[in-house]
Image 1 (cartoon, rainbow, N blue to C red):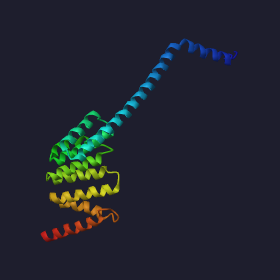
Image 2 (cartoon, helix red, strand yellow):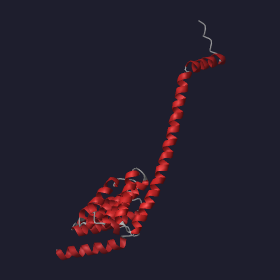
Image 3 (cartoon, rainbow, N blue to C red):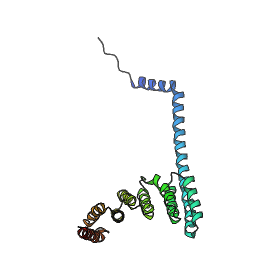
Image 4 (cartoon, rainbow, N blue to C red):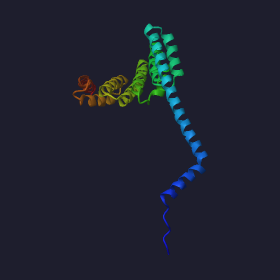
Length: 216
């Protein structure tokens, strides 16, 4: 039984061109769709860049209101940035500044509420947690403050910030009367001889030990 002849280059070429000719409308539609998608993505990227630039300019204006000392105006301007430019880096930073303005006016719960959605943010999460802790501490809620200082430390990217937040947590735990939690944190900090809080940690551990000995 003979072997079937292999198709020649010309046969294959004719076959390909024939398929392209038969499917040309669909190919053309697909190419148009890809072009539209690429153009739409470029427009979206340009729109996002423009939005970010406008947000930065608006935040700068709001910061001028803060520097002027006009807290109600600063609060209003910062809230506008947060609302109009939600999702931008400038809006997140405006939220941090807005919470600070609210704290200056003793509106601690309102400031904490503004910060809570940013608590898990990769970019401003540490700052948000640290400010939440400050808001609780200003209200005398030292245990809650300590817990958020620890979260701020965990979210921090730099070792110095981690140490400073843990030191703040240890102080807050001490004020809350939870000396066991405070001692644990101070011991961790004292074990880092080159850390920024190592010296204070050794002093605080000595104080806690002396206090415990006196009570016993």
